[in-house]
Length: 112
Length: 111
Image (cartoon, rainbow over all chains, first blue to last red; front, side, top):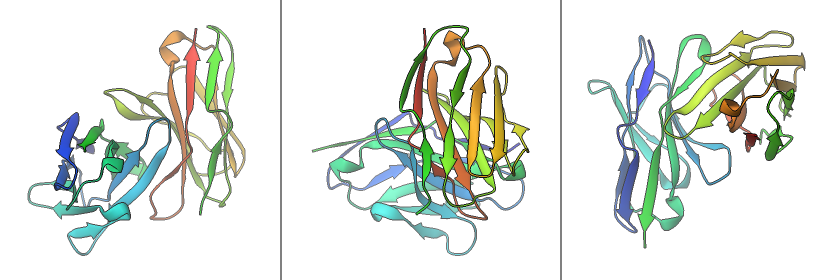
């Protein structure tokens, strides 16, 4: 069965430092992978997706993600964190019948 | 840009009430979804629909039903609200290989 794991409930990083939010997945076949961000009391906003092609995917707000097939990972990264990046981040994989299956979310806290 | 509108941001309902959550999208998407979001559990799929009058159960359909009479509108119905249905409810729509577009969510409290 398709599944997604986000092993960290919270990630803390100082402003200006690089950040990584981890995601691993389990799928049969080729994975369609997504990252979403949620700001307080708002819906989810699409950040980026991997379907095929280059393993490094660039998305909105300076975020990027690296697809690693051998490690079944799709970690979200940003070279220099901003305080405004503080939010809840969700990794997702497209499952059977095109449904998105979400991880439990990782709260990113960027400190000034 | 696709817009997904959920009619209420906050709702407070009493136990046993019938509750309607409305969702409208403006880009002619075939696929629409209802999720609930709870801390530590992420998003869980309640129901989804691939076309008008079509519906499929998601992972947690118990206590819920849906209606899709028009392509742009997908309604979630709580037949008899209970306190364990207090949650954030998120509607989404999708076309093709794109990601989902989400509404802003409805925070429902059942008292």
